[in-house]
Length: 221
Image (cartoon, rainbow, N blue to C red; front, side, top):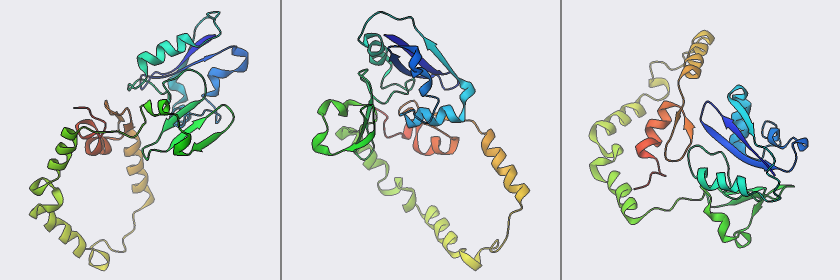
């Protein structure tokens, strides 16, 4: 069995896999539309120059022990693209709504709850569960004066914004020139991406500050 790593040199992440023969072109499937991992597929489309493939020698085994060894170490970390902690082939993951998606090598399908083996639900994309302390923390953080929507100064701003809707807005009917739109778009492209250390997702600074970092739902106590 030949083990390989599809490495994202910019994000310092990797897809771990194995194949019986390089003649199948298996490592390079991840650079095509046939790649079953949507996160990796989008990354290779956006930044193909950032990827490099490391291929090991054939270990002479018929099992995927080496791939499983790397998965045991890297899975459930910000440095791994793999959707499944298992090396037996195909992929499975539970989305944020608790629905289980899987690929058995031929087609993608949505499994009914009664069809899902319990061990599949151990993936890093499973619906998160929180301790009572964590639930209490979230509850207190948005209670009373801690809730921004209940602060007088915020409510005053919201009321002023409502009063400026439509024709009451001083810029009602104004148009933005295409050159200005292009400058804004270029500025957004130049802004740096940020990777959350808790969930591994990559986003712009605004979303990172609001929803990730210390505010991430996947942050452990």
